Image (cartoon, rainbow, N blue to C red):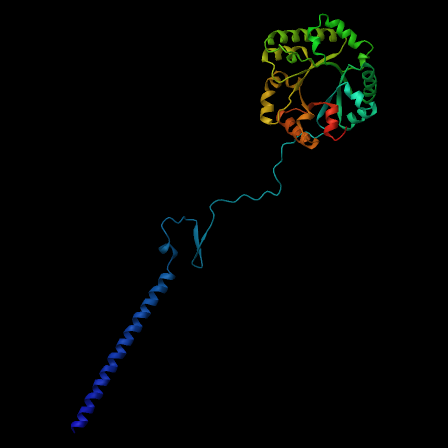
Length: 320
């Protein structure tokens, strides 16, 4: 009997422990389920509850994933680049060229004429030192429709006591009806005492221009001149009063800004009278010169240029 009672007690105790264990397990499962439910609720909550407060109104949600809608319209991509400024092409640039008397010794007349035609030279500014060669070239170019200016390059002309007689001698035997102009390439600044007597020489130069202009007007011939880039404004004003065209020798200038600065006074006086002159010696290849020329024409707003000179450009082109 005692044994049976002990067995019943142990069975009752085991049943109680089993119930307690089941309750613990049930409570644990319920707790985990609640946690999982909370996590799911948090993940599926409205995005507005979990977004930072500084998110713009342009944010919208698609399938709970934030998507930012741009508030500005992106402009369409252009299919063609913007139009670049049109620079003069070689055929659009009006080219003149100096021809010194040495060219007649180094090249045949036909070669010189062909070179001028190939390079679209509209005006040949030709030295009068070799009068026989000058007369032949004048006649040939006149037939081709190329203008010819008779160039006087004697610096001592400025101190000649009788400039009219000097001009008479130069033009003697020349068919002046075929000339487009007489060109003075007289450079008083080459004299040794120029810097100490600068105003004196500039006054002599202006007087020479006045005498030459009067002389040429009586014969229906234009006057053109070559000048450096450093004459003072007062002297420039007098030069522009006398000369029909002014060639400004813009040598050894590689910067476009500097070029525009050095020619600003001349261009301001009379842009239509002003033509820049560039020389072959300042370039290593013809291609480099042509690039520079195109940029210079655009910078200065002109389409006229003078090339210094036929012999040096032939060398630049590879000729001898």
